[in-house]
Amino acid sequence: MSERRRDPLSGQWVAVAGERSTRPRVLRLPPPPPPPPAEACPFCPGREEPDTGIWREEGQAGWIARVVRNRFASLDPPGGVVAPPPSPDTLLQRHRLPGRAEVLIEGPDHHARIGWMPARHLEAAMRGQAERLGALAAMGFAHVAVFRNQGAMAGASQPHPHSQLVASWDEPPTLLAEKERFRDHRQRHGGCLLCAVVEAEAAGGRQIARGHGFVLLAPWAGSHPMELLLVPETCAANMSGVRVEGWAAIQARVDRLIEATSPGAATNMWIHQCLAGSDPFHWHAHVVPRQDVTGGWELATGWKLEPVPPEAAADLYRAAWDATAPVGRT
Ligand SMILES: [Zn+2]
Ligand SMILES: [Zn+2]
Ligand SMILES: [Zn+2]
Image (cartoon, rainbow, N blue to C red; front, side):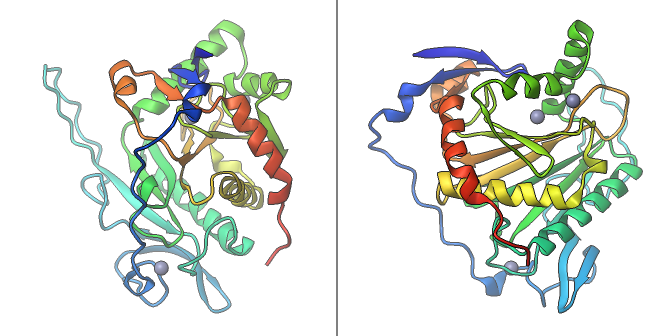
């Protein structure tokens, strides 16, 4: 059975068509290229460039997490700290997109993966994330995109564990759309949209687990197969008050959960939050194991095709959840 569903957070409609996942597939994606050798990795200890370092936390045998300026930033210019003038209203609008891009190297071990690295390394990295978020907000940036690309299919260019912080002077379209939905919900019903979603899902079939201060859901109308929504139990517009140990632990556990259910999948994680302002918002993270390619029907219609019903995804994740429990701290 096929149906349309609306994502309460983004307002986007998706098409849930469970039978799609059982269709015969003759054409397959090529395997990802082999990762570059560790000898060429710019994030490994011993290859630090002195002029790019921004923050680091030291362990007993050298740094265990560090932040560097991204030398290949997608925004222009790196380190720009002056907001651009507004663009004139014309048919073909153009606007400079200055900002600041930083890379958070989440441990010294090139071959580690966040689900299995020592907890103290990921916790140190999350302290760096919090510190840089605060610093970028204090510079006056309107938005900082916090995300992790893991694997070539997810857009990563380096296998060494890392995530990114990209600051901009404008809030991006995805966040603006979600903020509009939060405002609309408050006006119509009062209260927080995402708290209402979490409450509704507690009785539904899409809550996967609660733990480490977070609720894990298979979203009602996610845009990707096996998508996860990670919601802090504490309602806050941004992550400035998050407990680092819990935040690191839930990310590691979700990484193990994805590997258990989609072995070898590349993964994207991104955070939605409001740095400032009085708009109603509840920060959260989207996590997606990348196994889909956008086809012509989706491009033509804007309806994302969801071949795995979220209820089926939640069943798979729940069955694997207990086996992902941490086995001990190192
Ligand atoms: Zn490396
Ligand atoms: Zn809330
Ligand atoms: Zn979101």
